[in-house]
Image (cartoon, rainbow, N blue to C red):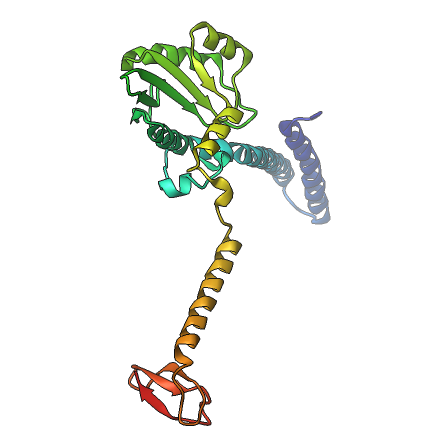
Length: 285
C-alpha cells in the first residue's frame, strides 16, 4: 500500500478544511456588517471540523480492514476447530463417518473400538481431553502395555518431531514398554528419524485406513445420504401399503368391490367399500 490510512485521512482533512474556509469567507463577504471575529471563527471551525472528519475516515478504514482480514482466517480455522473439538458422537455415527469428518476425540474413540476387537484391553486415558502425550493404553493377552498417541490431522498437516518426543517421555508415566503413533496424515522426515531411533511404531493415513477397512466394522461408504434415506423410507411405506391391500383383498363388499381400512365417525377403524362414495357399506373390524 503506497499510502497509509492515516495519510488518506490527513489528505481528506486538508481538502475539507479548504472547502470550509472558502465557503465561510463567501458567507462573510456576502453579508455586510459582520464582526471581524466571525472571520477567525470560520477558520477555527473549519480546521476542527476537517480534523474530526479526517480522523473518522481513518478509523472507519482501519475497522473495515480488520473485518475483511478476519473472514479468510475464520474459513481456514473452521476445519482445525472441528478437528480440535472434544465432542464425541455415538459409536454408530463414528463407524459410518470418513476419517476427515471425525474430531480428534472421535478418532481416538474409533481406535479404542478397533483395538478392543483385536483382543486388547483398552484404557482410554486421554480421550477428549488433555492426554499428556498418550491417548490410549492397550494391553495384549500377555500383559504387555503399549502407549498409543492418536493424531487426526489433515493430509498437509504432518506430525512434528516434538510429538514423538512427548510420546517417548509419556509412555513411562503409564508403565508402557512399547509406543505407537497413529495419524491420518504422515510424519515429517525428522519425526520419522526420531521414531526409528527410539523404536516408536507409527501408522500413517494409508495404513490406518487399510487396517480399519479390513476390520469390517468401520464402513464409511455405507453411510447413506439424506436422499437415499428418503428413498428407502418411501419404499418401506409403499411395501406396507401393498401388504395392507393384499390383506384386505379377501374381504369384499356386497357390491363385489374389495374393502379397505378406514376410520369411522367415532374415530375407530372399520372396513369400508373401495367404491366409496358410490357404495357406503361398512363392516366392523
